[in-house]
Length: 257
Image 1 (cartoon, one colour):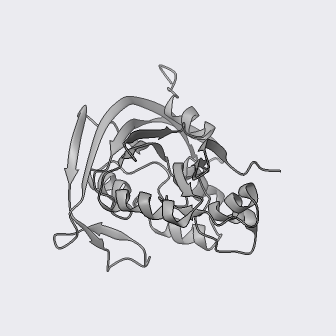
Image 2 (image 1 turned 45 degrees about the horizontal axis):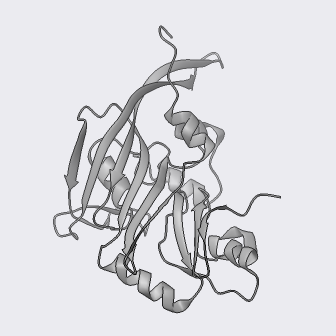
């Protein structure tokens, strides 16, 4: 049976886990394993009432905090609301980002032209948003495309591994800002340039060709670290990305191919 999740830290008040990519945080189905909260209840016991402190998108993996008591959730929630929490992500994006690092400041709001109700975009009348990034490495990776004779042709594509910090925490902020920079996250079905990929995902109709275009099973964004001061003590929780992310991030196309 599939493992519930990787436990990063646990005490009487907190359960910190490395949320798997592809798992929603809140229950949406009757299957207890279909959400992070459902799995937490299986892990802690059916009488438990875990409270999410921070939330990640379905396809984003990484550090997620749950409080075992409502009062603890309230305490920590106030830290998040007042932006006293440092968050660091890893992202694999299309193309070689030429700068060693930078800051993206662009307001975000609803994308009223999109067929997807949850989609946002950069817009002048949006909420202020700031994303900081650093390039960890630039690399190439062979991507296979179908040839006319039914065979596959491999060509090298450029990618960058970024370390990202979002001082503001707007919905989909990192994904939108990196796409706005011209370097969308690998595997991003909503902000990668073709939102039909997202609609195909939710309608369970992604074709083999669409999966080949996406290259990875989930979008390549991982919440690596959360850092904050609580009750006079600095707390730091970190987790490494899943194997598919690590393999892609550390790949290098063979020279001359």
